[in-house]
Every structure is written in structure tokens, then in C-alpha cells.
Length: 95
Image 1 (cartoon, rainbow, N blue to C red):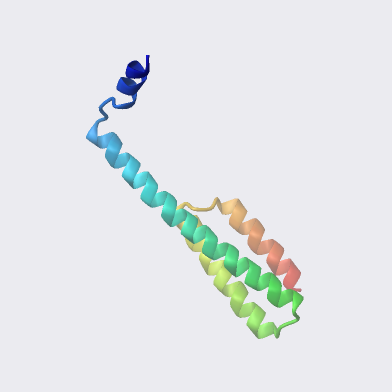
Image 2: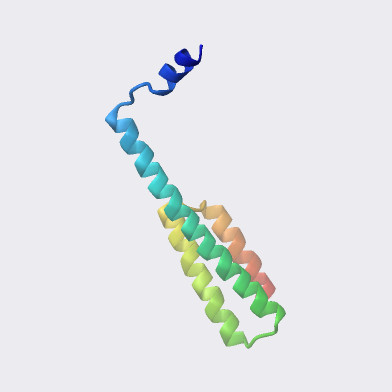
């Protein structure tokens, strides 16, 4: 019985499927890296708002966040509505 299960696991896969697995893994790592970077900037913006930093510093951080979110939408990491919602909420907190 164990031999039958072992044979199923070692079933051959097409080269195109193996290539697709590699591509998906690469894309997943890039997306996670981008999302992590965006979350770091969001934390930085919220920290600067709570610390009452100067308006110029907060605007620079918010501008960096806008850029990252827009690039993420362009690459397909984020949906357009999520980016718009995130930017709008932080902009409202700036006021």
C-alpha cells in the first residue's frame, strides 16, 4: 500500500508545469517583498502622524507610499480599489 502511494507521488510532470511552478514561486516572492515594503511605509506614516512630526516629513512619507501603491497596482500586487482606499484613509488622517 505504501508503494502505491509512493508511485503516485513520483508521477512525472510536464516541463511546462515545472516551469510554471518556478515562475509562480518567483512571482510570489516578489509580491511578498513589495507588500512588506508597503506595510513598512504605512507603519512609518502612521508613526509620523502619531508623533506629530512636521508636515513636510509626513508628506514625503505619504508621497513615497502613493508611489509604492501605484506601482503595486501596475504590477498586479494590489487591486486598484485597495490602493485607493488605503491612500484615501491615510490622506484623511493627515488633515
